[in-house]
Image (tube, rainbow, N blue to C red; front, side, top):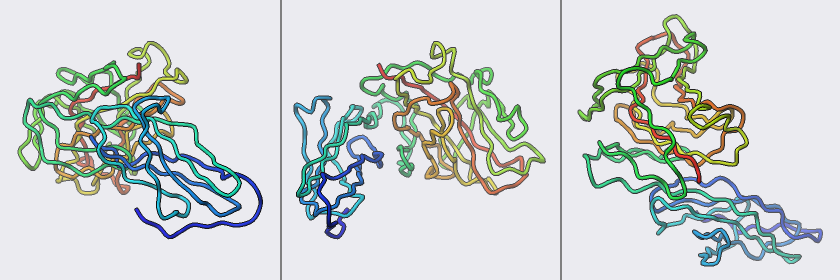
Length: 303
């Protein structure tokens, strides 16, 4: 993205720089963003990224012409299923500031086995594609710690607020999307009859699976799940988010209605609870036919 040249004036201090969330993460692509403030003219901006945490084999992306804050760069040529470390660097007449590095994971390449559905829309902070009958590849640096099993029950998943907002049905044998792509043994979440609410969700406490409360354990988690918002819904046109505890939205609003979509979240920490949530969103209403489906679901924990 190209923006107009950014110049700020007065005082004597190196820039204050903040690395923003990575967006548009795919198998080989990502968009880096950073914000800054500076009292004197900014003379250089760049991002660096590397698969090594010490940036010993880094790639540098120089921003030219200089952009106003925030500035960003579209990155291509990455490796699927790889962990990348990145940072932002801004220079003015008084010095250079380098942000602490952060890391993200590119989406693992789809397996060659199994039929693959049509490519879906890119989610707000993750990525969605048409699911196949195959399981996803394990992201580099992660271990599979949980696979949902809806073949006979709800696998420990519960409806929101004890069912006051959502209803949940386990082991729905077959669910077909508008393209006749069928997934078997899925979880159904629907609005509770008579509940006038914008949100309804399903959740599962992951404490046992993760060996205790995951809050503050220094690990990050990636969820890969097959989701369907039926085209027959009256008001529910998308899913709001997948949550790792409170205030950890990984928005999935861009799923294509009527199509099974495989959504991969960016890496996140559990911050205040060991529960994993899948949220439905709509205009307020009471129609119990408004629903969504969770097909397969995999949870990966950083090593």
